[in-house]
Length: 248
Image 1 (tube, rainbow, N blue to C red):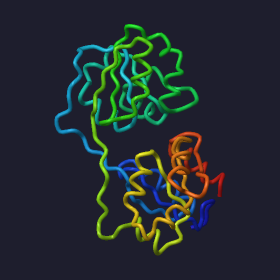
Image 2: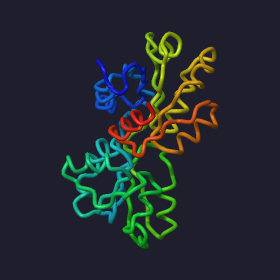
Image 3: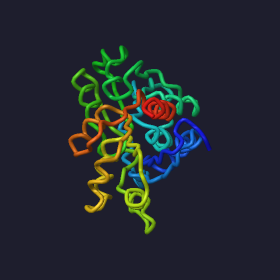
Image 4: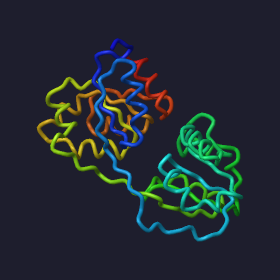
């Protein structure tokens, strides 16, 4: 197949259930796509339920927070304002008929959400943040500084996957000319290094990364990657595709 990305071997490291659409987009542009999830998403068997029966604002930090969190808090969504850090999660909420009231206008991360006008004056407001276990604390910490009463609902945990005998990562680094590795979080970067053998570490660190946030690019350089990462404007699939095409 001919296309803008023809001839490129691209490793997709998103969790399996979140990778299919992007894989198809890249294949449609001629890329050879290899899937190797760097994070496993597991629902918690017995998540701690929210303490209150009503919240002013409920924040979903990711698609996983939506799909695994909503079944735990459906009654709470009726009277709360719903917020999210990204447009993709907002689209998912819309599809599930829980449209988001508060979405960043430009920067799609915790900092972008915190800059939203509706989160500037939250004194006395009750806020529930739905996330994975041990998520980034910035959002909750800053809202507490602004006077909000913040609680968390951990709806899932992220685990390091166990590669099977046909280790796609090892094969790609050893046998193929792997052109690009797509990374979607700092945790995925850590896992990438943890799952790479010492004999292939130099090959890995010389491989081009494509990332979805400048923080990941900065971390990659600190970890020893030799090439500046390709950074997409947004974390969504179409934005990642456009970033790869632009840097072809």
